[in-house]
Length: 152
Image (cartoon, rainbow, N blue to C red; front, side, top):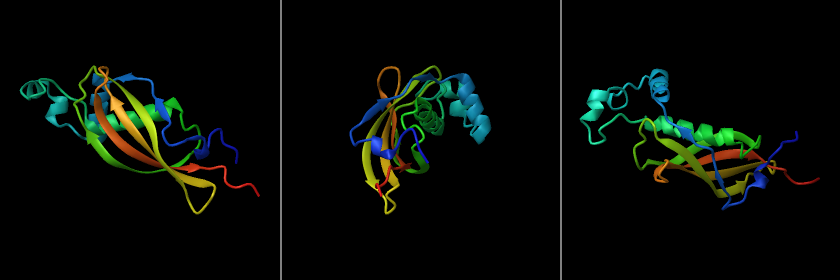
C-alpha cells in the first residue's frame, strides 16, 4: 500500500509546530461531561476564586487531548502512523486557564526499525506552550509507523 508519508521521512532533531487553539469554556464543560470530571477547580467559579490560581483551570488530561488533536490536525505524519504505543514522562508545568491559547512544538527524539522492515517506532517530544511561550505540558509520545522497507 502506498502512503503519502513514511516513518523514513522523519529524522531525529526534526521540529514541527502546530497551529494554535484557544481553550474555551465550551471545551472545559464538554470535557467534564465526557469524562465525568466535575472537580470544582474546573467547574466552580466561586471555589476556584479561593484557590491560589484565583480562577478556573482547564483539565490537564484535556490539554493532553488537545495536544494530540493539534498534532493530528497539523498533518505532520500524514498517513504514516500505524498505532499509538504510549506516552511517557508527561508533566504539567503550569496551569492552563480558560482563554489561554496553546500550541504544540514537536521534536523527533528517537527512531528505530522493528524486526519487520516495513515498520518503525518513533518517539516525538510534545511541548505544549501557552500564548506567552511558557511550557505548560510536555510528554514523550511513541508511535509505530509504516516504513518503506527494503527493496526486493
